[in-house]
Length: 582
Ligand code: FES
Image 1 (tube, protein in one colour):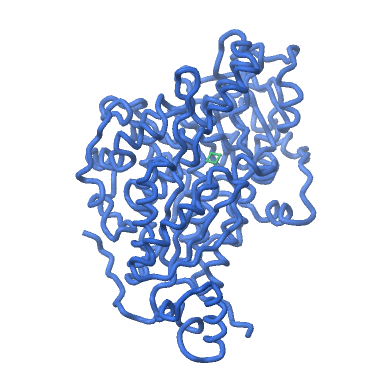
Image 2: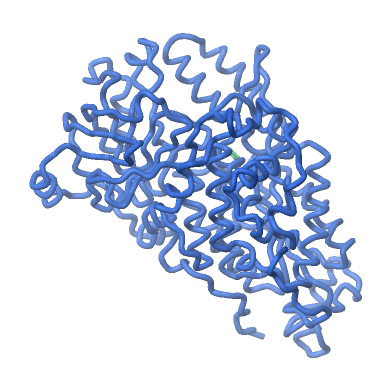
C-alpha cells in the first residue's frame, strides 16, 4: 500500500493562476498567442497543461526518433483530458559533442529547470534516451519538483554482423583492439560499422543509456517495463501513449518527484544497478539527482548497498546478450521482482503509477533464465559498484567488478603515467614504451575540471605490444569516467581529481601502486613525507578557461564523488514562477 495521499480534485492549477485562467489583459495575452497554433478555447478551461520536454535532435542520433514518439505521448494526454505542449531543450548527444557530452549535462539540466519554472506547465513528460539526457532531465525536473514522468526512446535492435550479434560500444572497443592486434582488417571494421546501428534507438548494450533508463524505472519515475522495449517495437509507442495518459492523473493527484525519489527509491536503484551490471556513470548521475532533491546519498551508500547484490542480467559488457533479449525475457520488472524475493528491495517505494514498486512487479515471470539468471546462477556474486579508498583516492574511486578481470582484483604493479589524454595518445603505440601487462596504467587530468567534463577515457586501450601477447586487460587508474559499454579492471572517478590537486596528480612512472578491491583499498606505495613533498611542489598543467560556458563549468563543478553538479544548483528551488514582466 502506498502512503501517498492524492491532492483533492478539481482545484485551480498553476497554468490558470496568472496564465490561462481569467479575463484580464494578461490572461488574454497568454491565451491568444497560444491559439495561433489552432487550439480551441475549451483547452484552456482549467485542465492540466502538460509539457513534453523533448531532447529530440539530429545531433543526438539516439534520440532522433523522439519527435515521432512525442505524438504518441500527446494522444495519451489529450485522451486523459490534458493539454500537451511540446518543447525542445538542449540535447547533449554522446557521440556528437566535444569535449564530452558530460560537460553539458548540467547545461541541459539548467535549461530544463528554467523552462519548467518559467512556463505555464502543471506537469511534464521527460523524453530522453541518450546517456546524459536522462539524468539531465531528471535533475532539472527535481529542482522544480512539479509532477514529472520519464519515457525513454528505447534501445536499438541488435547489431548483426557475419552471423553474430554486435553491441553498441562494446563491440566497437573489441573490434578496435582486434584491428590493433592484427586480427581484423580496416575493411572488416568498416563493414562492421554498417551493421552496428541498424535502427533508431539508444545503445543496445547495458551501457549508460540502458542503465539510466533502468535507473529511471527503478527510481519509480517511469512506468513499469519502460526501460527495455526496443525503440522500433510497437509497444514503445504504447508505452509513450500510456505515459501521456498517466501524467494527467499525476497532476490531478499532485504526485511530484520528491514524493517518488526518496532515499528508499535511490537505494532500490543502486541495488538494481548491481543486478543489471549497470554503468559506473550511474554513480555520478544518481548522486547529482539526489543532490537536487536534498536526499542524502553518498559513495558509501553505493558500496554498502551494492556489496551483496549479484549481477543476474547477462548483457554486454558484463555478459553476453543485448537489450532486445532483455526485453523478450521480461525486462527490468523481472530483475526488480528477483531482488524483492531476495529481500533486497524497499517494496513499498512509490512509483509514478501511484502504486508501490512491488505492486508493479510481483506477478511478472522470467521468460529466459539465461538472459536474466536466477540469483543462484548469477554472473557475479557481488555485482555492485565497489568504492575503493586510500592515499591515492581519499574521497574514493569506483570499480565495476562485473566488468573487471578476477585475477586483477588484487594487484600490485609499477605505474606507467600519462599526464593527460594527449600524452596517452602520443605514447601508447610507441614500441619503446616501458610497459608490460603487470604494470598499472595511470591517466591524469581527465576529471570534471581537468578534461574538462570528465571524458569517458578511463578504459584506455592497451599498448599494441601487450595486446599482441593475447593480453586483454590491465589495471588502469584515472579520474576519468568510462563508457557504460566498456569493460576491464578500470579504477575510475578518482577523487579529488588531479586537476584539483588530488594525490593522483603526483604519481610518477615507476611508483608502485596496490589495488585491493575485496578490501576496498587503493594505495600509492610511497612514504607520507614524499607524498607531502610532491604535493607541495605540484603545479597544475590544466589551464582554467577564462570565459564562456567552460568558465562557468570549471569554476563551479563539484567532484565526481558529489555528482559533478554545479555547486549552485544543488538543492531544490521549487516551482515559483518568476515575476511577470508585462
Ligand atoms: Fe547515445 Fe549510446 S551514444 S545512447
